[in-house]
Length: 319
Image (tube, rainbow, N blue to C red; front, side, top):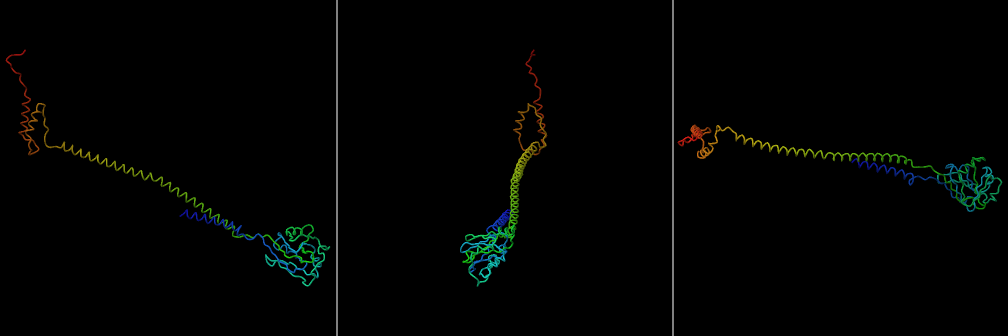
């Protein structure tokens, strides 16, 4: 159960780490935003009001598309207003949201053409390039705040003076947006994975110790069994020996038991006669004590056999 919980924690931690990575890549919010406006019937000139380029920050890019070469002109705001007086033109005033630029149609009943719009002596800078042309917001901001400071300048955009000044304008700004839950996914996933790994190591170590204890305990269990068997066999042998000793002792006791008879003293001369007499006189005894007559007979026969033999007198002395 402990190992299962450890594996589950490791999987949850890895899932958190994967979610954090996906939150930074696949599920990450857009790293930039673009506001666009399509111009139709804008007139021969389009003006971008001061500060519109910095709505999304001081870094970005402006893309301007036109029917022909596009000229970007900088000048004092008052000079631009004076030059366009009585001329139909469109002003880009800001961004209604992060995807749409807001515009204003100015003097729609005014003139629809400009004569040599790039040759006026009111302009500070004129840059003409094929469509689409781009403006780096960072560089433009640096130029406005540089040696020749021209903060919040307007931009006048024209073509040849007979066609509308621009057909489409888009401004792109970088965005530092990120999923707020990504750091928590990384931290939580890493912590849970580490806890699961530690628990898994502890579980495996405990199981190994249990196996070692079981291996060490088996001989100890077998040794008492062998000792018990040996003790049992020894006890059986001892019991058998004790029984044998008891039987032997019992036999000896019966053999040497006091029957009431006195031991008979015999000499070597009475062995044959005693054997014959004993063979002829075997009869059941009325009692364990020997009769008086038998004792006397045995005594007399013993005396007869022990009489000294006199030498034979053959009628003369043997010298």
